[in-house]
Length: 189
Length: 135
Image (cartoon, rainbow over all chains, first blue to last red; front, top):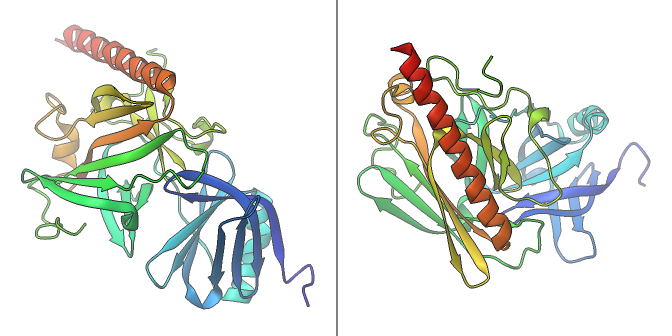
């Protein structure tokens, strides 16, 4: 069944997550995505029907494909080249009916912006661009500090085996009193 | 000119303009870009830049085989003082106030903390000299 035009295979695609990046093999077929960790273990299987949106983000090295799913979860695959983006776009459009959005990174180095919550994903957006995203499902505890600060504590996870030397443990946001967007919402960011 | 200085007049902060200028490494870890005066923090597989002008302080603490690195950023009312521009220009903004990392490499952690401290001191000194010249 599988012809060259109905299956795209990539040998070294990194799955991004809490502990950094894990390398693996990604197959993109008309019915969805299947990623298998190099050396076995973790498998990520995304069915086309579960995908709500796709996005391309230009990284310092290559491109990242963001996959958002109905359940509010998401996965990120990195390591695509420019020509992969060009060849995948028509494929994704034809087979999944989705045209990936361009999602540029915020790289100005500012620490002020907006926090957006969508599903499990908390995005920090600077100047309309995404600076970083964290998964709320990795947060073990949320605390209010005083009137204006929200502290997120992350699970300690030593099992991912990813390539990260420094692991994010805690992240706190300052919500000035002038910001009315999150009033009464801080307890469940 | 001011060389690597990237704090523009009017308090506008720009560490990078092109994503290609962000350093990469095989291993994800906190990095210091002295040329761009930026600290790069690994968050979910990405290296996220923070300009040194946003950094208020950095500390490290050793605990067993790990080292904890805590970076505190400037937020309204603390740090963004004289030219409290982010708050004035963006009153609805939310600020990253603090991040804490656990490092598996004590030597790297100590080095990074030292580099950030030195860079911060250097930039603060330069800015105060500039402010003095301007008066």
